[in-house]
Length: 408
Image (cartoon, rainbow, N blue to C red; front, top):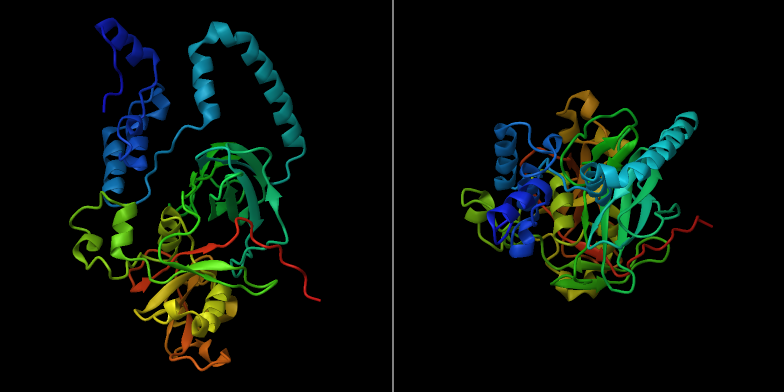
């Protein structure tokens, strides 16, 4: 990778002083996005945008090597514009003055009419995506598709959202490409996120402005080894379900630079990959182009097993994560929750896993046809703990989730 290229030393010096470096992926498409982001941050023209110390750079590189989310972020288009304005002061002086006056007026209006919401910047790869946002139930985590917020125009764009957790849909209109992901808006006054996975991470860029992690839209509508399961009207949408758990091989596809010392490298490729908690399962499912099933979708999948031979081995290799949170009733009866300090015995820290076996809430007994095994739901800690709980990918058959109708 050559960040600058010129035929003379004068051209090279001019580029180093005044031109942004060519992104590594322009020269080599296989360069990981996180590694490229680290390189560009280290070479930023603006001192405040660079790593403060070499140890910070080393720490971010170590996070990359350990397959953890990095702290560096890509510059938004509006930030790149601001950099240009500062480098061309004479040319842009009049425009800058006008913008500052407008900004002052807008700031005064916002102070007078502060609604407790955040201005949320949304970015996708590729850009020009339509963005739909649905609030998630604060207890179960279930998306409420009867309430929808839509950003103006296409990405990069913004929405004004209240604190909470959201189910976000990114659609490339005119193509079959879309993605469904989970994102968080923190309480006002919060300075740093709790957690670095995409469903919890955000970056504060202004007094009431945050950036969400970039949404990378998969090229495929249906991922490999998925089967279409018909849904239930006003309850469960039609969805594609992977016929196998996410494996070590799948993990190495999205993280090809994983070191040889990591368990995923040392374990059999076709064995399930076990993330450290629900949050990392959600994070890796998004990177792989899908999401986790909800507990309601899980129950419907169990009902559907007799009609889908490809799913006969469902949960054969052990427990799997869902995207759902434990309810207060499930937390009270959970041995895992009782091991935690009281302040952590909430749905924000305890998710739901599913497995074969008669241990807690029976799903198998609800089937019309007798299943070969019973299926159960159990609470488990969302992140930071090693456990043999895997996950599998699902994708909706349609890009837009069906609107839930109120019960008659």
